[in-house]
Amino acid sequence: MGRRQMWRKVSSIPQITYFKPAGIRMAELEEVKLLIEEAEAIRLKDLEGMEQEECARRMNISRSTFSRLLDSARKKIADALLNGKAIRIEGGNFEMATRRFRCLEGHEWEVPFETMISTPPEVCPKCDTPSIMPLFPAGIHRGGHGRRTGGRR
Ligand SMILES: [Zn+2]
Image 1: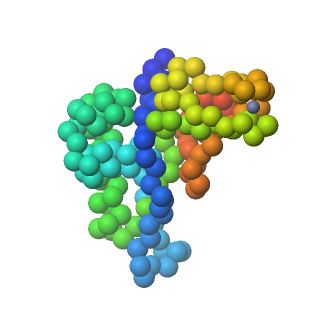
Image 2: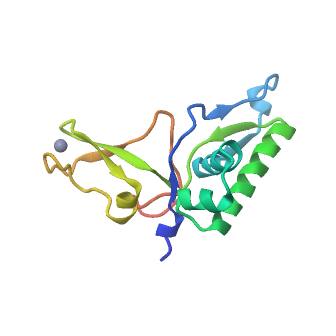
Image 3: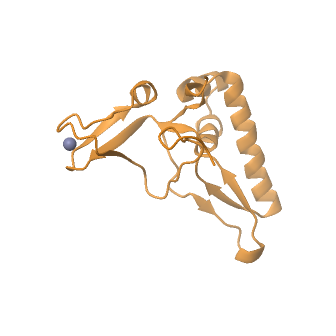
């Protein structure tokens, strides 16, 4: 199926997820959408200065996939910077290094990436309720995921 290979491990999500050039009216503003995993690729390679091999390992993807991700991220950022477009950071096929869950009763716990992609939790480990939900950092919307909802739009 290959779907699992699409999960990219992300250990940091940017706090600021929208950048807008000064002096351009909203109506005329074009927007570039940078995926969360593209932002992570830039962070590891360009900000932290890691080798591509290491970056790919950290994100749990092949080196060629990482390379494509990085190219795509750089191209989008260059496009925004040089053509005066806004950047919105959101969506993608990623999973956090650890994901926090909360159940209906208010219990919270963390699930590591490796568990998330193999056997995501179905019930709360404390009270066994199936009414659980993942907690996302504020302002993050994911896209292209569709595991539970079945398919993409
Ligand atoms: Zn519970």
